[in-house]
Length: 274
Image (cartoon, rainbow, N blue to C red):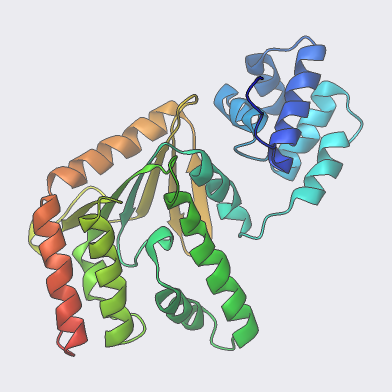
């Protein structure tokens, strides 16, 4: 008997339909990308179901393939539970074979405890509704499922020391959060490095950065700021981002030294020290 094919997600079906119609139109990915005004790599991600086009790109795809608004209409049914600027990244995390993340001031979302995430959401929303906060916390913590299972990605986590020192949610919440990171590092679930204050200026001190690598596709880079994010697939930009990550990593403490620092910081928070 043949191997059963894994169920396709709605995004994968969208991408497969795009590929079939492109081929039927006699267009290469490069040719379609020129008509859509994007990179061939982006078309590849669309067809693999890793990313969805925005409304403007979907409209240009319909024009290029003469599909009479088909891809725009279907796109409306695939709205994500994540913010628009992050939705594509959440999908790419599920496909990545390696995730390299750097955080400047806050614990990366994939590693956050529910209490840490809740404290962040409450800080962002001064007139928050508890039900909405609870829903946001569930969405945030459910993302961590990509780190479980036999096909989980290799995870590198580089933290500025400020992440360890900023007391989010109070001493107990912060201690639990840092102990979780330390436990994951000790158990081999992530490779941990900390950029200490003593390192001074470094190549990533302006931004959060995530690098995503795939088994059968070009890598991408993602940077994020307040209520905005930029997912980059241009090879030059991805290479520049990887170089900056490597430079910062070269200034960081070793895995064991970083683990010891995270444990010590957790203990300081637990005892009310700073």
